[in-house]
Length: 138
Image (cartoon, rainbow, N blue to C red; front, side, top):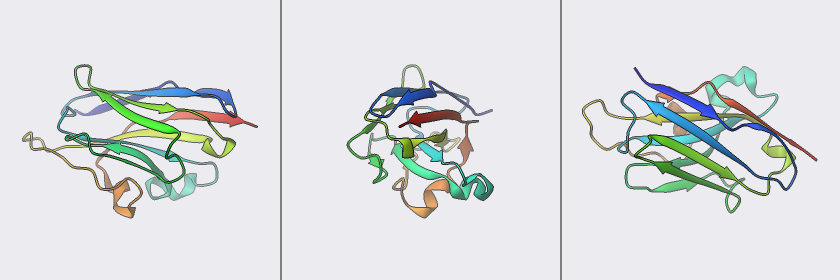
């Protein structure tokens, strides 16, 4: 069974930094596509479709970022610990939202490649965590 557990969210002032972690278990491994999405206030009723792609990394460490976070956020993964990270710097109030870890994989172990995280199809990724709240005050 796949399990994705986010941690590291919290409240911070604008200009501050946070690092989110996502501990993965089950079929998720170094050959999986893994990504971060966020859902900002007011978009909750849109469900998964209302989530904004933030960053994605796949089996060949091909990385894509959403335009709103380029140059400020960095995605990385520790394959030995099966953990995904999102390092967030120079946070802005508009970064406030619930941040979700997500993953996709092939059960037979084939490499899973991520679509560009800002592509509309990116939210069709198969597995999601429960989310962690990030609040940035002015």
